[in-house]
Image (tube, one colour):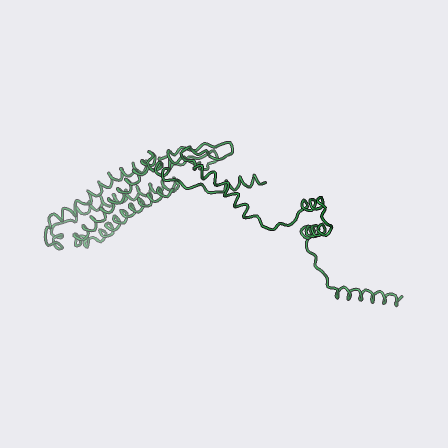
Length: 310
């Protein structure tokens, strides 16, 4: 029992923290470097380009406010294109968060799908704004809200949606390529066993760890805890077990037999037997002596009445 308890306590013990050398080796491994480059590249594309879209749409809407007043749907299209660009940026940040803190591969796949969907719809509305601006972007109406540099501002308002749509498509394809690399990384694509449960991986290359004969994974040599910690852990477990044992123990049968063998008196023997009986049997409620006498008197009276009737 003690050996089984010690094995169980060793299994329940948390693994020792990684040393600085182990963390540096994991950080500079090729798998981690590729994952870090792809994640930060996707984050840069998915943050800078949506912010550029929103800034250009805001400037265009302010400079072409009289044109937007002629067709109220223009305002809705500008707002929706800006919202989709912000949604694109938001799901890019969410993808970075899930990769950094170990999200599920299915969740990462969902984030990639939302990123591409937001990018595609934002491009569609940018193309539509460019098409409508070619019809309604007249110089006479634009000059009503312009005081200087009206020609260059009008060209910006008319052609910026087209440029933004094309760049969103190109950079969206680049981000899709980076997101696919993130998703196919061995550290993100966790291998599963025959029961569909995730397997423990080598943090250096993402390969699944082999299972030993005792059913526990075999750690690589560089990931093994130092020998000082492995030696100190059984001593700490022994000290923990000894501290949990009470200082005063109830005498057992073995102590009773040993006391009889060494010629102890009967008084000590009866004391041990009383302690054992008190542990083995449940406590019985003692009836007060007054109640016992009262019950005896009642039974005698009852017997006297029966005799008198006879």
